[in-house]
Amino acid sequence: MESSATQVAAELEGWLLRDMDPFPYFFLVAMEAGSLIRAIAVLLAFPIAWLLKNAGRHDAALQLYVFVACAGLREADVEAVGQAVLPRFLAEDLRLRAWKTFSLYTPSQRIVISSLPRAMLHSFVRLQLGAQQLLAPELLCTSSGRCLGVLKHFDQHRPRLGATYLPKELLRPTPTHKYTGKLQAYANALKQETSSEEPEMVSMEDLHRPVLFHDGRIASRPTPAMALLMLLWMPLGFALALVRIVMCGQAPLRWWPLLARMTGVRVVVEGKVQAAAAGTSSGAGLLLVCNHRTLMDPIFVAMALRRQVTAATYSVSRLSEALSPIETVRLERDAERDLKRLRDLVKSGRHLVVCPEGTTSREALLLRFSALFAEVTDDIVPVAVDTTATFFHGNSARGFKALDPFFFMMNPVPTYRLVFLGRLPPEMTCGAGGRTRVEVANHVQRLIASTLGFQCSCFTRPDKYRFLAGTDGTVCRTPSLRRHASSKI
Image (cartoon, rainbow, N blue to C red; front, side, top):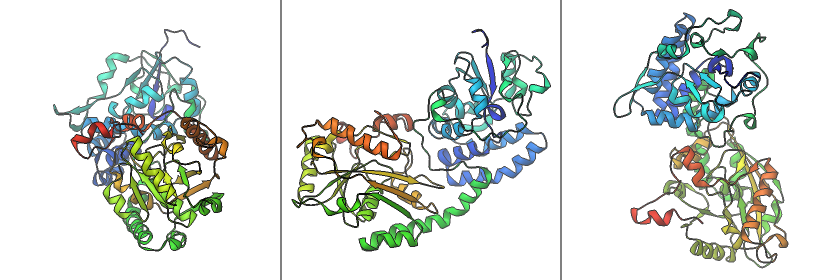
């Protein structure tokens, strides 16, 4: 280990990252901060950028990507994508051996150098790589914060780094190697590599700070080939999504499993399904407690049980309610009124589906469960839910929520997995067992997490939205309801 005075400069593209091509990151910025048309423009710019790079004009290729992807966007939107969307894709592309060596140094010693815009990388470098310094070009912006699509000249970093010669055997043909100077160059991890590919991936737990939340619609890394395939699929996928959603909404419940198979929707059902579908001997309904993956969780629960259920919802759009083939009950975030309403529904014999996380989550962790459901009834059935998507995620913090079902159904083979875990034993309930509602909620959370191989967390809906969207996740329909809507269940 070097002395505490030593600083290590690691180049992001080509050293820490396997892939030197910046296309995926600019495509994500164009899609998430811009529009579909802008994303298509970035894809059309790829052949020109490829020719420029092969002609040795790396700077020109990068400037082309920056102009097409960022011109006219607000710098704050680019930074938001850099915080909520890019970190997962960057972390998945880290070179294991390089990261292990780089992480031996303390955060104050780590310096990351990149030719990509600083706004896209600042959050990832600070949180996931734990580096306190990032040397990267800035985006030129107007006084109102709009990007001009131009980078400040790369050589602005030369005075800070000097121009000390680096031995040829430690150099790699990457866009920013010319900046590595007065600082001790980081290259030991790559010194003996003959290929830029490594089979090992850096696990999220090995990062300085794991990527806990991520946003965006795109599920797979958008390489040029994948981006082209995805864009070509979108018209057909949207038509297929309409067919899937409309057919399900109009057809009787008993036809749903058949229609799902016919249209390519894969539904995997495990566990004690018959017991959950049967109900209780007293004629009351069951409370089905699910983790929340997409807005369609209750619909797939109904499909698995082959019986109608009622979904308890909050802040669901009117469009989603209108398209829903099952009954929905809107909660008001008022604990006493919501509890009475849920109890009445269960006593009337309805099977009620609740998602105590309070918001959809795509990560392999469960948000903290609201404990309100534990006081509704002792007849509680935990249901573990997981989804698989090829092209598009079925949830988003910054996007239009009403489109979540459409994006999920636009995947070629959207997959739902539901595991019915059986009713809670009487000793683990509030009524018969004398447990507190928090104990019951935590027990159900642990059951579902262990079934799916997820982690339990204490993060809440506001925590997620503050990180991904800069809000607390509340939805206020009128100004007079602002204080009321922010109260917790």
